[in-house]
Image (tube, rainbow, N blue to C red; front, side):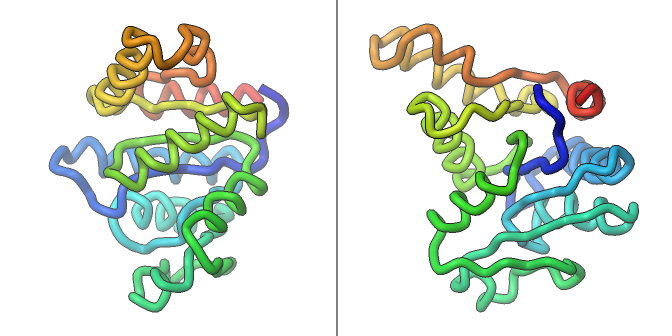
Length: 182
Protein backbone atom coordinates (compact mmCIF):
# COMPACT_ATOMS: atom_id res chain seq x y z
CA UNK A 1 0.00 0.00 0.00
CA UNK A 2 1.17 3.49 -0.82
CA UNK A 3 1.29 6.22 1.83
CA UNK A 4 -2.07 6.36 3.60
CA UNK A 5 -3.40 9.68 4.85
CA UNK A 6 -7.18 9.18 4.55
CA UNK A 7 -9.17 6.06 5.43
CA UNK A 8 -12.74 5.60 4.24
CA UNK A 9 -14.64 3.48 6.75
CA UNK A 10 -17.86 1.70 5.84
CA UNK A 11 -19.85 0.54 8.88
CA UNK A 12 -23.28 0.31 10.43
CA UNK A 13 -25.74 3.05 11.26
CA UNK A 14 -26.81 0.65 14.01
CA UNK A 15 -24.77 -0.93 16.80
CA UNK A 16 -25.49 -4.59 16.09
CA UNK A 17 -26.04 -7.12 18.86
CA UNK A 18 -22.46 -8.03 19.68
CA UNK A 19 -20.71 -5.61 22.09
CA UNK A 20 -17.44 -6.48 20.30
CA UNK A 21 -18.65 -4.39 17.34
CA UNK A 22 -18.85 -1.25 19.52
CA UNK A 23 -15.44 -1.97 21.02
CA UNK A 24 -13.98 -2.46 17.54
CA UNK A 25 -15.40 0.88 16.36
CA UNK A 26 -13.88 2.70 19.35
CA UNK A 27 -10.54 0.97 18.85
CA UNK A 28 -10.54 1.82 15.14
CA UNK A 29 -11.35 5.49 15.72
CA UNK A 30 -8.73 5.90 18.43
CA UNK A 31 -6.17 4.07 16.32
CA UNK A 32 -6.78 6.23 13.26
CA UNK A 33 -6.34 9.36 15.36
CA UNK A 34 -3.18 7.99 16.97
CA UNK A 35 -1.73 7.22 13.52
CA UNK A 36 -2.64 10.68 12.21
CA UNK A 37 -4.94 9.28 9.54
CA UNK A 38 -8.05 11.20 8.54
CA UNK A 39 -11.37 9.38 8.81
CA UNK A 40 -13.62 9.70 5.75
CA UNK A 41 -17.06 8.30 6.45
CA UNK A 42 -20.79 8.71 5.91
CA UNK A 43 -21.19 11.64 8.30
CA UNK A 44 -23.67 10.05 10.68
CA UNK A 45 -23.69 10.42 14.42
CA UNK A 46 -25.56 7.16 15.00
CA UNK A 47 -24.57 3.52 15.20
CA UNK A 48 -21.05 2.26 14.69
CA UNK A 49 -20.30 5.12 12.28
CA UNK A 50 -21.02 7.61 15.04
CA UNK A 51 -18.88 5.61 17.46
CA UNK A 52 -15.89 5.57 15.08
CA UNK A 53 -16.19 9.32 14.40
CA UNK A 54 -16.61 10.21 18.07
CA UNK A 55 -13.56 8.11 18.97
CA UNK A 56 -11.50 9.90 16.28
CA UNK A 57 -12.67 13.35 17.41
CA UNK A 58 -12.19 12.66 21.14
CA UNK A 59 -8.67 11.37 20.45
CA UNK A 60 -7.81 14.61 18.65
CA UNK A 61 -8.00 13.18 15.13
CA UNK A 62 -9.48 14.49 11.90
CA UNK A 63 -12.82 13.25 10.58
CA UNK A 64 -14.69 14.32 7.49
CA UNK A 65 -18.29 13.29 7.01
CA UNK A 66 -20.00 13.00 3.65
CA UNK A 67 -23.77 12.88 3.96
CA UNK A 68 -26.65 13.15 1.49
CA UNK A 69 -28.98 16.06 2.16
CA UNK A 70 -32.00 13.83 2.83
CA UNK A 71 -30.14 12.12 5.68
CA UNK A 72 -28.81 15.40 7.07
CA UNK A 73 -32.38 16.70 7.18
CA UNK A 74 -33.33 13.69 9.30
CA UNK A 75 -30.80 14.99 11.84
CA UNK A 76 -28.55 11.94 11.80
CA UNK A 77 -25.40 13.97 11.00
CA UNK A 78 -22.66 13.86 13.63
CA UNK A 79 -22.97 17.09 15.67
CA UNK A 80 -19.24 17.34 16.51
CA UNK A 81 -17.81 17.18 12.98
CA UNK A 82 -15.71 20.14 11.91
CA UNK A 83 -16.07 19.11 8.26
CA UNK A 84 -19.38 17.84 6.93
CA UNK A 85 -19.93 17.79 3.18
CA UNK A 86 -23.52 17.50 1.99
CA UNK A 87 -24.24 15.74 -1.30
CA UNK A 88 -27.40 15.49 -3.35
CA UNK A 89 -27.49 11.67 -3.45
CA UNK A 90 -26.12 8.45 -2.01
CA UNK A 91 -24.18 7.88 -5.22
CA UNK A 92 -22.53 11.31 -4.97
CA UNK A 93 -21.66 10.49 -1.35
CA UNK A 94 -19.89 7.26 -2.34
CA UNK A 95 -18.08 8.97 -5.20
CA UNK A 96 -16.84 11.76 -2.92
CA UNK A 97 -15.71 9.29 -0.27
CA UNK A 98 -13.83 7.39 -2.96
CA UNK A 99 -12.15 10.58 -4.17
CA UNK A 100 -10.97 11.48 -0.65
CA UNK A 101 -9.80 8.02 0.47
CA UNK A 102 -6.42 6.36 0.09
CA UNK A 103 -7.80 3.04 1.38
CA UNK A 104 -11.21 1.55 2.15
CA UNK A 105 -12.04 -0.32 5.35
CA UNK A 106 -15.23 -2.25 6.00
CA UNK A 107 -16.23 -3.18 9.54
CA UNK A 108 -19.58 -4.65 10.67
CA UNK A 109 -22.73 -3.08 9.32
CA UNK A 110 -25.97 -3.65 7.50
CA UNK A 111 -27.23 -3.26 3.96
CA UNK A 112 -25.66 0.16 3.49
CA UNK A 113 -22.27 -1.17 4.54
CA UNK A 114 -22.65 -4.14 2.20
CA UNK A 115 -23.70 -1.79 -0.61
CA UNK A 116 -20.70 0.49 -0.11
CA UNK A 117 -18.29 -2.44 0.16
CA UNK A 118 -19.60 -4.26 -2.90
CA UNK A 119 -19.70 -1.07 -4.95
CA UNK A 120 -16.09 -0.15 -4.13
CA UNK A 121 -15.05 -3.75 -4.93
CA UNK A 122 -16.90 -3.50 -8.25
CA UNK A 123 -15.25 -0.17 -9.06
CA UNK A 124 -11.86 -1.77 -8.42
CA UNK A 125 -12.76 -4.75 -10.61
CA UNK A 126 -13.68 -2.28 -13.38
CA UNK A 127 -10.35 -0.45 -12.90
CA UNK A 128 -12.05 2.75 -11.73
CA UNK A 129 -9.58 2.81 -8.83
CA UNK A 130 -6.68 0.74 -7.55
CA UNK A 131 -6.87 1.53 -3.85
CA UNK A 132 -6.60 -1.15 -1.15
CA UNK A 133 -9.82 -2.55 0.29
CA UNK A 134 -9.60 -4.13 3.74
CA UNK A 135 -12.41 -6.21 5.23
CA UNK A 136 -12.00 -6.17 9.00
CA UNK A 137 -13.35 -9.44 10.34
CA UNK A 138 -14.68 -8.72 13.82
CA UNK A 139 -15.87 -11.94 15.45
CA UNK A 140 -16.72 -13.49 12.08
CA UNK A 141 -18.61 -10.48 10.72
CA UNK A 142 -16.88 -10.56 7.31
CA UNK A 143 -17.46 -14.27 6.71
CA UNK A 144 -20.96 -14.01 5.15
CA UNK A 145 -19.72 -11.44 2.62
CA UNK A 146 -16.70 -13.57 1.78
CA UNK A 147 -19.00 -16.59 1.38
CA UNK A 148 -21.24 -14.62 -1.00
CA UNK A 149 -18.25 -13.61 -3.12
CA UNK A 150 -17.00 -17.20 -3.14
CA UNK A 151 -20.48 -18.34 -4.22
CA UNK A 152 -20.40 -16.01 -7.24
CA UNK A 153 -17.10 -17.64 -8.21
CA UNK A 154 -18.45 -21.17 -7.68
CA UNK A 155 -21.49 -20.39 -9.85
CA UNK A 156 -19.35 -18.98 -12.65
CA UNK A 157 -20.40 -15.34 -12.29
CA UNK A 158 -16.98 -14.13 -11.19
CA UNK A 159 -13.43 -15.25 -11.75
CA UNK A 160 -11.31 -16.51 -8.85
CA UNK A 161 -9.14 -13.38 -9.24
CA UNK A 162 -11.86 -11.26 -7.60
CA UNK A 163 -10.56 -12.60 -4.29
CA UNK A 164 -7.46 -10.47 -4.97
CA UNK A 165 -9.52 -7.26 -4.97
CA UNK A 166 -9.55 -7.15 -1.17
CA UNK A 167 -7.70 -8.30 1.90
CA UNK A 168 -9.31 -9.81 4.97
CA UNK A 169 -7.79 -8.65 8.26
CA UNK A 170 -8.70 -10.39 11.50
CA UNK A 171 -9.69 -7.74 14.03
CA UNK A 172 -8.95 -4.06 14.49
CA UNK A 173 -5.48 -4.47 16.03
CA UNK A 174 -4.29 -6.28 12.89
CA UNK A 175 -6.07 -3.72 10.70
CA UNK A 176 -4.35 -0.80 12.44
CA UNK A 177 -1.03 -2.57 12.17
CA UNK A 178 -1.64 -2.99 8.43
CA UNK A 179 -2.60 0.69 8.05
CA UNK A 180 0.24 1.86 10.28
CA UNK A 181 2.87 0.20 8.14
CA UNK A 182 2.14 2.82 5.46
